[in-house]
Image (spheres, helix red, strand yellow):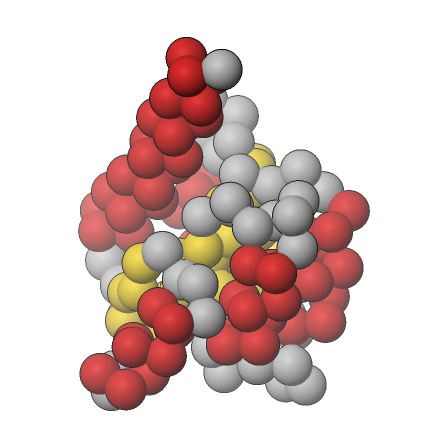
Length: 134
């Protein structure tokens, strides 16, 4: 395992916590604290997954997710929304703009790791399926 995960959260302690958890599981982690930087990183790095907060300065997580889904090189990167927003309306909107999964803060480490693992496994299975059908 050497998957690269981008963590986008404007709360430095939350970003460090997620980074620590994921690095402990062997993931490479890049962190940023705003939507514009997230878009720039996503366009320049080969990412395997993005963990995205919704409430970000400048460009919010909904718009970041939407833009990532519009670009060919990031359209299939799994996006896990991790937000303090617990309203069903926000979860529905996140799904509409392209989020693959939604967890609410605070999140327990095993739940986060399980969701990251599951989304990466789905991505790997989809890639394998594409290879065998070509």
